[in-house]
Amino acid sequence: MTSSIETVQCLIIGSGPAGYTAAIYASRANLNPVLYTGMEMGGQLTQTTDVENFPGYPDGIQGPEMMEHFRAQAERMGADIRFGLATQVDFSSDLHKVWIDGEKEIHAHSVIIATGASAKWLGIPSEKRLNGHGVSACAVCDGFFYRGKSVAIVGAGDTACEEALYLANLCPEVHMLIRRNEMRASKVMQDKVLNTTNIKIYWNTETEEVLGGDNVEGVKIKNTQTGESSVIPIHGFFVAIGHTPNSKIFKPFVNMDEQGYIITQAGSAKTNINGVFACGDVQDSIYRQAVTAAGSGCMAALDAERYLRVILH
Ligand code: NDP
Image 1 (cartoon, helix red, strand yellow):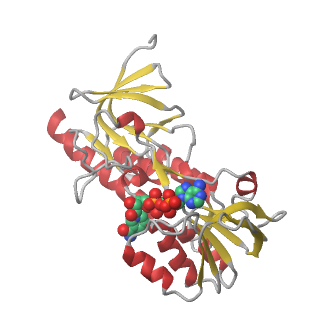
Image 2 (tube, rainbow, N blue to C red; image 1 turned 180 degrees about the vertical axis):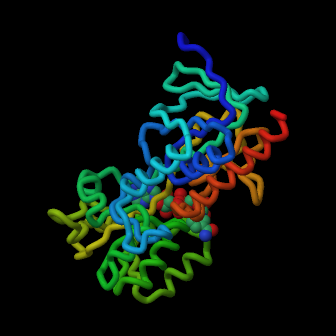
């Protein structure tokens, strides 16, 4: 621990839509925010290609380019944006301590957590190779590109069911690949899926490989009961096997649900710790959209501004 301690009014951790929006609002409120980007500057959207559902881009935009716009706007408003990963926190006193890259120590009167969540993947090489070329972890983001085409989706939780239903409105055939002989999803979601005629369920089914050269052309599956392999021709392959919120370092202090999503007070971005706010996917297991993350980033900055007005004046 060699570097000197820096004290800031508002520290923002994370650089997705939530973090950058918080930075825009905090800058304009004269909170002089410092934002640490994390290792994946720009967050999950830097992993996607076309974004067509973010309002304000009538012709759509590439995910990485959109995140550049977010960053540029936050910088123009005066946010101090730095590359670095928050590795440890101590929220036991009013001045919140955060360590960056295991060494630099920052003391912040307010902290906005916007560290996002990471989609879980199957871990097969073809899934990685074709990511953004037919493989996606977000049907609401990318389903539109497969209108009129056949797709497959892996998973059997509420997310997979919701996404299968979303896709069933766009695609003639949705092949739902389920690794066990039952679904984890709530009964109501299961019933909806089972009653949708263009969703075809494959029980006891594992994905062996996603097929295709430049784009997805099919999926090779295996029935784990019979040992038989087969190929389904598809254009889109959706993985909906859960997300992991990036909240581990906050666990000793901040209240979370059993999956690690930070709990915020209804209608606000407040956590159980005074002066610590959370926004974006790290506190949202339901909507997970860029636009909802951005909205909650705005809420976090406004909550931080109100909090600082009381404690600093
Ligand atoms: P879940 O953890 O609930 O479900 C994950 C699913 O993916 C399970 O069916 C699991 O199978 C399957 N899976 C995991 N790993 C693999 C793998 N390697 N290969 C194949 N299948 C795999 O995640 P969700 O994202 O669905 O939901 C997260 C939480 O959010 C839940 O509490 C859910 O209820 C909630 N939610 C609520 C919604 C709502 O209320 N509208 C909408 C969306 C989510 P297995 O069952 O065999 O483990």
